[in-house]
Length: 198
View (cartoon, rainbow, N blue to C red):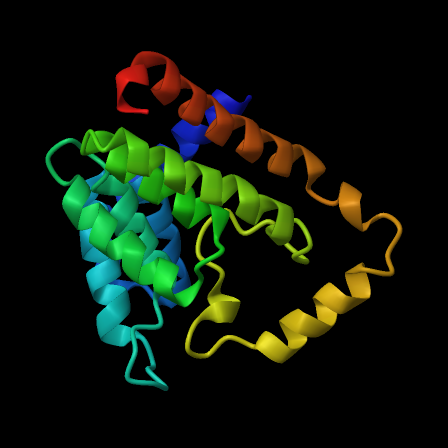
């Protein structure tokens, strides 16, 4: 069933990839996300470029945090990992305790054979999960609330409310556990296969 849904998604992406210029921001964001998921670098680059030219900027900073993230994901290759690292590092400056970005920074350093630094990023990601689990959502990427136009007051209020919610630790518990397991696996694998670097 999941496979059928993915095939259907791929067909929609393929049929709409030539019509990007007629799309609004929401649809362009979906196309960029889908392009990153199917590893279509050209589609992601085209969609993100259109998003950035149409985005109604309210500040001097780039507000399309997800576009940067999608571009970074498709650049996580042995040839382009330095470009991915630069994009991820700029996102980390906005949200330094983001476990998903820290994980991807570790992936970039792994591709660059800097295994010791990669493990450091993975360790930071694991620590960040403990803090991020208090968030009112499981973002799985950039947290726009920390961006130049994010509503940090509402975010802080929602986090405060969750402290008094007895069920709050159960929200997205499976997703947090899977993220933690994935990062631990990467860290353990590096330490086992490249023990001489530690």
